[in-house]
Image (cartoon, rainbow, N blue to C red):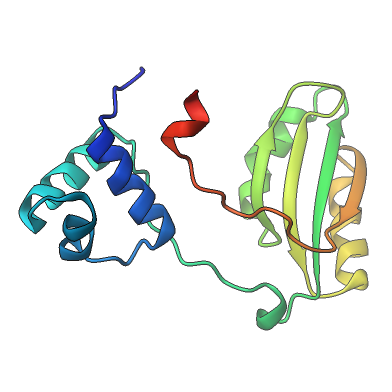
Length: 151
């Protein structure tokens, strides 16, 4: 379902994507609304599921995870559904996408070290063929969704 988002709501969304902890008063000053008017608009966007949640960004390196990797999985015949039912239990997986193309799954994972990576791949290979790409650095991370992205 497509929802029309007016210019004020786009400005509110931009502020929240820049800093999810910003106060309604600070947003109001930026967009020219009172804090209660901002709160009402935010609540409506939450109800419409335009705003899906608020998160904290955590450094994997500073939590003891030396490796971040992208792993693709090309599931064996009959193994995709069993994999989808267990992947949510893998603590290493921080994002998982079901995709089109030769592979069925793309996962973003964090791991303690290369030995942890080896053990994790050993868990995956019963479900399909894997490819692993070690992330060296983030070029773009959590880029905001802006109105100009639609034009």
